[in-house]
Length: 301
Image (tube, rainbow, N blue to C red):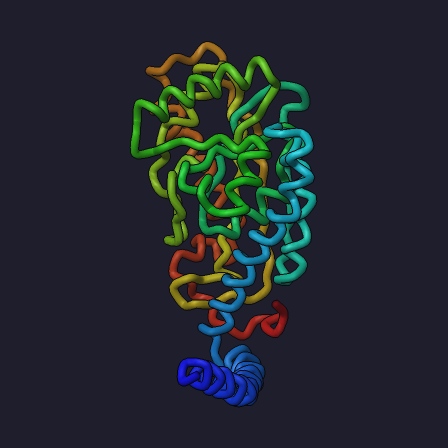
């Protein structure tokens, strides 16, 4: 009897507790509704973090939607068209105007290797704008474990390499060279190897150039202008703006050998760096993120 009475007492205590929780939750919700707009309009840093959080979260959500559609084909490079279609609208959410020039330089009916500069995760916007058919990126293996995005990329045929294990990376590149020729696939490589925010270009790693020489296919350089007009990680600034994507004439590799790779990589980097400086807003590449907040479209997501 004593135990039963104690149990009923606990039940009554819980019933009395629950009604007291809802006002607290409601108060927290109202406080959040007040704080978020306040931080959005009063703190550029908060706006930067909100925008980046939404950018990454939205991509993960879109990947969830894409997975069942892509799974119908299984792992297939044609699934990249689905991902591209689902991601193209993001630039409108952020008020970013992407201008593509030189798209006629893409070889019409042969495999090739695309090399592009790498500034931030926003490179995805420029890539989706100009991505040619049957073209997949080569990405670091860590991306494979990035939740829904990793699975969607795998289904779209993205090629993953472990950069820490050189032997495995070389083996994968050799397989990719065969795939280029036998399956009419193009690959997209960021030869800097990592994101670069300093307004220039890091020295190029030579894997993409060895790949092109081994397969004897052209290299198509693509340059994305500096984002300093609207984005600066150092200043925690993310507004709206314009980005130009320039496709350069293809660089042939027929007859070249591995001994020619260092000079080839340096020549391509020099041409890309020249164009980068030319098309970037202030002519200096925007390395110091000199433009201050307050541009047109700040209130836009």
